[in-house]
Image (cartoon, rainbow, N blue to C red; front, side, top):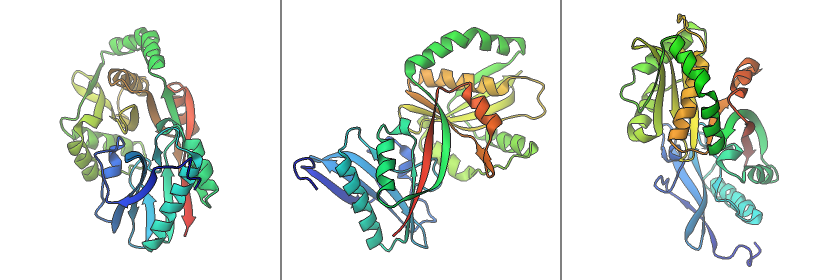
Length: 306
């Protein structure tokens, strides 16, 4: 390293920590993985970045399995040489643990302003792209407020004309999960949901999860689950509507509720997630999300044998 530019920088491998992480899912230690580690960058004894790995029984290291994303979470402005040396340090440490392959699920740019630089350095560190997923985003707190103001009349009419009620709340019970699963299965959609794990996460972090429901005379017609993956973001996680319902525009109304929730929670961006099937892009879903987004960023899954 250039000692002048990287003075007082140290790298560490340590047990998984959660207290210092805004991305709360990084603190989960899963029972079906052998080991879990954090790798951290400190400068003048202050945490400046980290990546968290889980190691499988066949010695594959994944950041992070069973989570929407993982990867490097770095403070803005770290020197590129420091990041490159940190990547090298992580690979050397994992190799010393017997790891054979490394998988990094790198979060899209809104979560980390240096995402493009990180992806560039991963490529030049010998990683290759296993998968790339496009996420639709709506970025900008002021833009969200303007959207709410400009569209309020239109969405209020859609609710009123159909005698529908938009409900947003923290999670009080988990009956909605059965309805989401049932409604999606009825439409022929594959549902990959670990209910027990989700219930455990909601119970541990109730302030991070929100239920948005559309009801008619107290009967649910549609649900969506929103998650504050970080303090400045809102992630559109699960959604479904009753296939037997007679009501219209339920998907639009759920997203209208998501925007209201995002403004109330004072987040900086909304992540509407990816829109694809096993065979490729789901263009109809992408078209729908495009109506409620103002940008698209990629989540990249990187792989390297070591």
